[in-house]
Length: 294
Ligand code: GLN
Image (tube, rainbow, N blue to C red; front, side, top):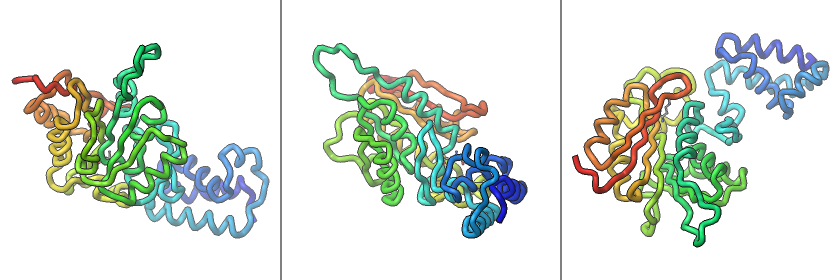
C-alpha cells in the first residue's frame, strides 16, 4: 500500500485535469478518508494507507473527476470561518456572499451596554436561507440579535437547523414557506431583511458549468425573469421592515442598474452599492422610509 505522501501525489495528479485547486482538494479528500486534518498528512507522510482507505480515496477522486462538487463530496464548506454541513438540497455557500454578512454586521444597530431599560433585541430576517450560512454567521457574531431564517425547501431547513445546532446557536429560528408567507402571523416589525435569492436567468450558460450543474436549480434560478425574486422581496419588505430598517440583497454582475431602478419605484433611500472581493457588482443595500415620496 502507498504511504500518505505517495497517495497525495496520486490524488493531485488525478485532480489536475478537473480543478485548478488540485493541491488543496487532494489534501482535503485524503484528510476526509483518513479522518484527520491537513497537518497530519505532512507530519505522518510515511504512514501507509490501508487497502480500504486507498479504495475509498479512489472512489472520491472518481466522483470529483466526474464533476461532483467538492463540498458535496466532503459534506461541508467553510463560510465566514464556520464549518457548515452542505448537501445537494442547498446552494454551496460562496466566498463572495461573505460581503453580505460583513455589511449586515457593520450596519446592525449596536446594543447599548448601559441602557437603563433593556430594549427589545434587534431582529434580522434571512429569506431563502439554504444551508443557513448567512443567518448562522450573523447569529454567531451577534448573540444579542434575534435571527429568523426562511426557506421554501424543508430539506434545506432541516440542514440549516442542524448547522445552527452544531454551533450551539439559540438566537435563530427557522420557518418554512415562500418568502414572507413563512413568517408567523404575529411577526413584529424587523430591523434588517437580508437575502441571497436565486438570480441566475434560466437560459444563462453559467448554470451548465462547474458546481452549478449539481446544485438545486430552485436555489440558483427564478426562471426566465432573473429579477423575479427581487420583485417579491422588495415589495414585501415594506410590510415587514421598521421605518429606517435595512434591506440587503446579493445580486448578479449585470443586475445593479435594474435593481436600482426597482428600488426607485418605492420607499427606499440611502441606497448603497458594493462590489465583491473580485471587484464584481454584488450587493445592494437600501433603507426603508415609509414617508419617502418621489
Ligand atoms: N452567485 C451564484 C452563482 O453565480 C448564484 C447564487 C444565487 O443565485 N443566489 O453561481
